[in-house]
Image (cartoon, rainbow, N blue to C red):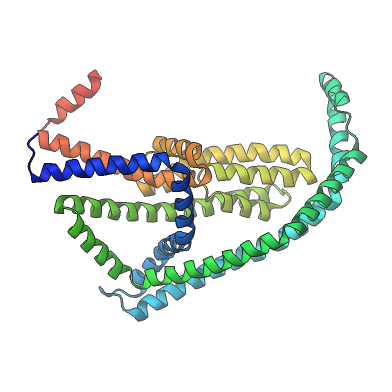
Amino acid sequence: MELNKENMKKIILLISFTILLYIGLSNIDSVLGVGGKFIGVIWPFIIGGIIAFIINVPMSYFEKKIFKAEKISTKSRTVSILLTLFVIGIISALVLFLIVPELITTFSKLIDRLPSFFKKSLEWFTRISNDYPFLKNIINKLEIDLDSINKQLFKFIKESSVSMISSGFTVAQSVVSGVINSIIAFIFALYILFQKETLSRQAKMILTVVFPKRHSDRINRICTLSNKIFKSFLSGQFLEAIILGSIFLAVLLIGRFPYAMLISLVISVTALVPIVGTFVGCLTGIFLILTEDPRKALIFIIVFLVVQQIEGNFIYPKVVGGSVGLPSIWVLVAVIIGGSLFGIMGIVLFIPIFSILYTLIRESVYNIINRENIPKEKRETDAGKK
């Protein structure tokens, strides 16, 4: 390698990076501590950026449908933001007014019915054991003491109440801090929405100055693609949640299941977390129905499995996978890997991330094929040999 001026810069940068990396790894605890404090400081702004991105999806829709001018004025932007916030507020209020009263009623009934529920469950299992003798030994070995269960339950509630009171001051501090951070995040989101074109133009200028044109164009392309895919993913996920909740509501009402509205709303909300969220809603539904009618709880499990098969094989791949341009098999891979690495957040984020990688890799492969002028027949022959 020739030691010219450009190569010397690269060598110096590489040596500097290696030294900094070594120092960082040698003092990893200090680095993590400083990093944690830094993230704590900028966290409201990160949340504000996420809020702005989410609000921007319906806001852009209103701007395109209502204000069709090429350049959006401050007045039209303000009206679009207010319309978006109004729609979000109406939807949130409807959900709260439907869910909260139902939850209060449901939990009141559950507290009253828990002792009788355990008794009825034991009687139900006993009746089944008469038809299936091999279960009788299992039930006899359970030795369920209802009085002991009630005492343990009330003891748990009492201890939890004392613990909550003792930690009340810490909780109050967290709530106040959360409210302040939420206000800062919301105000920051509004600033981003009102000045998103200016911020985008400034970011492009910085990229042009810092990176060569080829690299800056590539970064701009990736950012544009990411924005498009994440928007499509959000829209598809909300649409899929509404469809799934509507299907469950119709089926549960037709089947005269208890808590049909509450269970459908819970499933619809939890379905915002891809694939896994639906099962959380299912467990909630099983528990609620079980307190009323164990037989219908078993029927609900069968109904859920049928609807889940329809949703997993037809609705989700078409609505969400199709909206982000990702084949259904890679949607499943993204959910598994994302959940394994980062939990719920990984499940939510890895589908659009996989879609971005899938699109970029596909474009690169086709660019290589076109650049090498590989005939279609030869590509198919080589693929068949492999």
